[in-house]
Image (cartoon, rainbow, N blue to C red; front, side, top):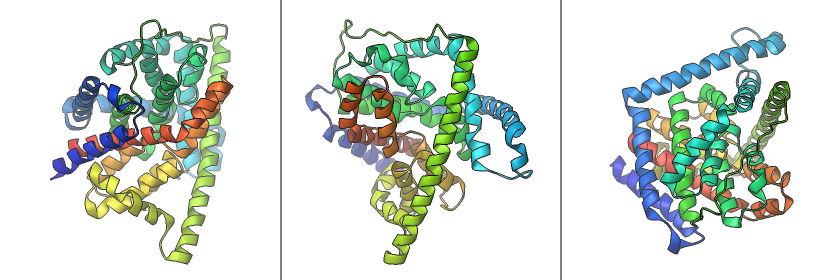
Length: 393
């Protein structure tokens, strides 16, 4: 039965993408079918095979070492503020972002990341039927983050037509930055985080290929990556450390605001209607949770977590799931966890348009105009990832 529901869910997600397509007649179906097949193969390998367990274990162990190193720096500065064996979200989850960001800066400076991103992008462009710029941007977004990635392509930003700009922004919203992956692994099972990272990469291309189909000529597809060659090692290191600090502080501030606002709204709704706002969202989004493969009796609870992510951000929803206040089965937890691993929320519209505005104000106005369409597409990517996991698990 789960396979029938899952297949219906896939059809629903792709149909929703088709309904929102800018050019239904020119959708290229062959690359979409190939990428869907790759999603199933890679997802199954990660979640259901010994090789997948070995690879995920290696990645998890690597991040555990990095988080332990980050913990030394955090404890040196903030250790006296926390009692032994006590958990503090800001110190345990957010501050390690600073160290991961610094590590990304080092790998950028010694030219390892640019090479990895560029050549993975070249390989992906052969699969997805899109340009090298779009493929590069998708991989770079998954490593650098949804705002920083535009700096690396700023030389081409002002030259891009609307349809290509949409794809670049959609990729940025559909993925997550490597600087926060370690923090996600503290809140969610790491194997679901790894699976979502890979599935979202292909899912972003699939949904973009349906919503925003186009062809790129060789003359148009010139990849010029901006590199800060004049900076010294310590300038780069200092910049990335401060970037990581800004991310940690920004996420922390947003969490304080969003959690407080959601609590206030829930209180008001319970006083007036006898039901919380999140429960109402759960009823609204429950059909999507069900078609993703969440058991019917858990669909409302699961959907409330999913909706919380959309109206606030993924950290609020992950913390809600990790806290145990929403009890879900292992299957529902897997589906919801993979849905949460992306930047698809309303706040990201402002973050992306703001990042583009800092580089090209005219293009920022274009991004602002299709902001809701960006969120629509990125949310479909998350739904697609969760649906595929529901079929695999």
